[in-house]
Length: 259
Image (cartoon, rainbow, N blue to C red; front, side, top):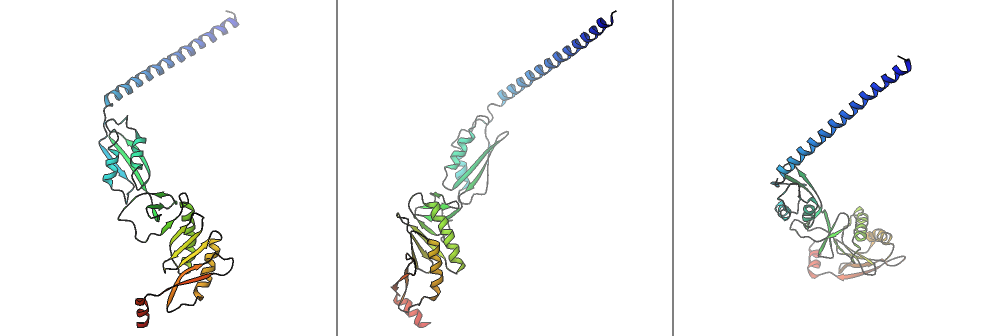
């Protein structure tokens, strides 16, 4: 046989075996996928009525009762593990007053896990709302709230600005053994502060930190009167300040005389 013809036959045989192997492998893969799909389909049909039987609440909420969380979750359709709308459950829990963020996860075969993070309350806002650590206002009530929370007031939308200012000014005052108890921002964005010793600081609309520092520098040298105590210190001037006094109550005078 001619060498070239012999070589061509060998190549043809090799190609045929490669083709046969490739087709066989493809058929095996297709059959396997069909069987796998059929098996999954049958399994889903058998378990389509799997119900949620267990609720797990995580995160150790302080103000939100676990019963309230479970009650909110049960408003959702828990009849099918596969058809449960996780986002709907998340929103139901999110609507509870103290809840800040929620994550919901399904765990086979019959459990949903709910992780709850509550607002960290830091202040009262306009008497009827609360502020969290991010300066966001929310509405909630609890007998567990500390009675020492500061009182902040201001126009709607100024919550974060007021909270940032409170933290800055309170830190300045505490370094000098003074405590800020309340802060108010007027509609014209004029600042007022109330200290725990009853003194009110009128700061005006600008340079509030600079004016508080001026008060800190001068306050220890202010003359204390026997018949009156400092009521308001007006710091709205570029230099200096004005002080107004209020009469000391008779009981306070008697206590001073006894001392």
